[in-house]
Length: 195
Image 1 (cartoon, rainbow, N blue to C red):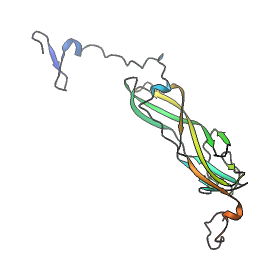
Image 2 (image 1 turned 90 degrees about the vertical axis):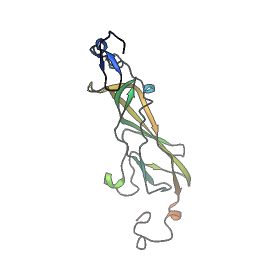
Image 3 (image 1 turned 180 degrees about the vertical axis):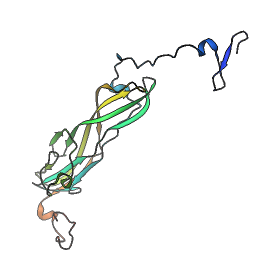
Image 4 (image 1 turned 30 degrees about the vertical axis):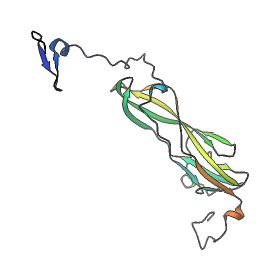
């Protein structure tokens, strides 16, 4: 505190010159409607991988549909964006499946289980896949997210670019029907494959 300068306590143990305390608030640097926020600006806002599902669980019969789905949903995070407190929302807009055998698929939604779709086991779905040969395959999913940001109560604005988030790969073993449906029949094991 300098002699002759009127000061006011700020609550954190420091004193601010009264002229500075009464100064108008500094506007948010990134809040201008002309501000362009890019995906590269979102380092403080990670989008999380989508949980994945597959049926039958971890295996497939060669020539029959194995069903895959992802449980992606909108995510909202809080943090600093361009040095200002903000929220960022990630909304899934596309799903890219790599079935591990050289085949890929793109879908607008994450799919669902056969039961949720009202289908019988081994029915084809928009996200299902038929393996043509026996083997072990590593399946990966990449979800594309649209991002929007908001500073306080200024409403949501789009982020320039798409955020891509891969999920952890998981293994699928494809075998012929005679190899898969052995050991027990459906009377002995009603929850077994194909029952």
